[in-house]
Image (cartoon, rainbow, N blue to C red):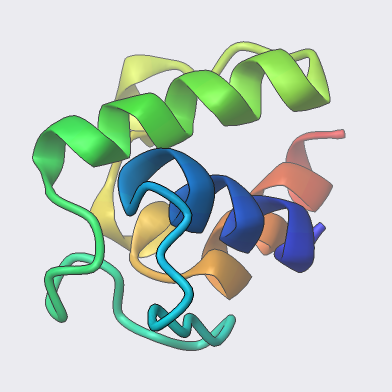
Length: 78
């Protein structure tokens, strides 16, 4: 799951740049790897890929700060 999310971010938000490295524990927003519009694209990708709806009240920094946090959130919702 981590690799799928990381690949989406690199391919879709960084145009497949080969010099972008993302680890599951990296702070995506704080590091600038993902901006607020990019985060909305990531959320849409997660909903489509894992076939569930993320309610607005769950769209918080704690669930989406890192790839690891996203994967844990998805696992908890399934």
